[in-house]
Image (cartoon, rainbow, N blue to C red; front, top):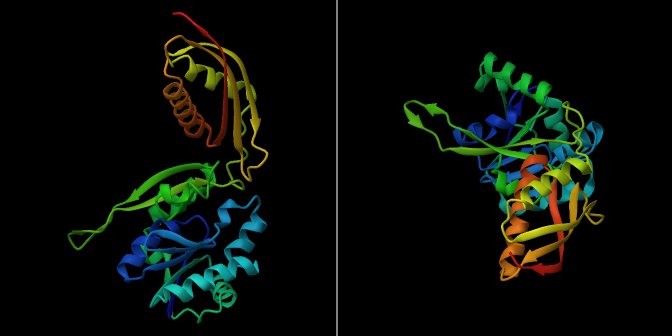
Length: 274
C-alpha cells in the first residue's frame, strides 16, 4: 500500500480539498480526523469532531485508542487499497497515524499550499476561527446517523481542470462541541415557543393541553424527548395527524437548533367538534 500524506495547518481547508486531491491521484481511501473514508462513504472509525474537548479530539485523530485503531486496521485489511491519503497537520502527525495503524511510512507528501491559493487558505482560517465550522469530506446523509444533535449542512466542491469538470463532491459542515464559536444553548422556553408555533399550523389540533420537554436520558448526544397532551377535532385521522406532528416538530427542532428530536409521546385527552 502506498501512503500519501496531505499536510496543512489546522483550519486551512485540508478536508475541503481532500476529495479533489484523492480524485487527482486516483486514491479511493482517505483517513481524516479519525475516520476511514472509502469512495465517499465512512467505513470505519469515529470522528475526532465528536469529542467533547480538544485533547480528546487530538487523541482520537491519531488513533491512540486501541479499539478505534483496530476497527480501522481491520477495514483496511478488508479493502486492500493500492493507495491511502492521510490528512494531518504535520509530517509528525502522519507518522503517528501510520504507527498507530501499523501502516508503511508516507511515500510522499502534498501540502495544502500545493492545491489551494493563499486567499482560499486565509478564508478557510477565518471561517474556522470566527464560525467554528469544520468540513468532513462525506455527504451529510452519511454523517447524520453519527452526528445526531450537531449542526450539519452540506457543501459542494466544484473544481474545473483543463476544461473538464470534476465530479461534484458533497462535503459536510459540522460545528463540533469543542468549537471556537463557543457553546450554543437553547432554553426550554425557547423550545416551547418553537413547538407551539409549529403545532398552531396543524389544522387537526384543537388545543395543546400540556407540553413537556426533557433530555433523552438514553442519548449520548443532546437528544430531546417531547411529551404532548392534546385535544383533537372530531373526524381527524389520528394516525395521519400524529405523523404530521412528528415530521413538523422534527424538521423545526433539528433545523433550527441542531439538536436531535428522538422521542415524541402524544396523549389525546379529548375530541371536540369544530
